[in-house]
Image 1 (cartoon, rainbow, N blue to C red):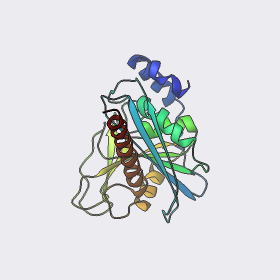
Image 2 (spheres, one colour):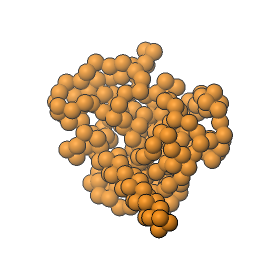
Image 3 (cartoon, rainbow, N blue to C red):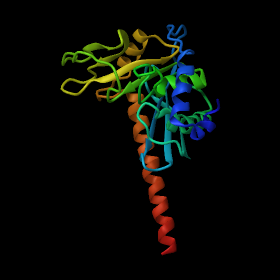
Length: 234
């Protein structure tokens, strides 16, 4: 199914498609060196059809920014927890297609397999693009875990139905943990280690932190442009 068709799906059809995607997930260890990493984030108002997507490209492990791509698109797919990828992936693909160089691995602001049907945004995007991907989320979607210790990189496994689906990682002392899970074509252990390598003194890893700043900027700029247009007609 092409992502351009997502907005025509019913929620039930979207869930059925997630079950299809789940059978394609590959969490085998990544077997090649990582030289570039992409960070991706989305910004939208859940009552609006407009979606802002951004990808920031870094060299790795230095994490120097070497490129960016953004996209603004629209979707009619409703805001439903567990199905947000159907709103987000088409816009992210628009940004992805603008990248002249594709990264060796993507880090997305959201879940990988730490999802009721194991198909969070990182898994969904990784499958659609056939790219190694990791989910780094600021909040838990599903699964239970014991609170990790308060030292840097203390961690605790997240369980759902007897399966380890992610790691709650203390990325900064005295802050809430972040939730790491592999998306596609990378192992759980590698996912956690890569995210640790991407922490630069903030709670969230640098790839998604920079992507978050980027999408907020294009959202603000787009709003200002609209205001300017309306002013012209006053």
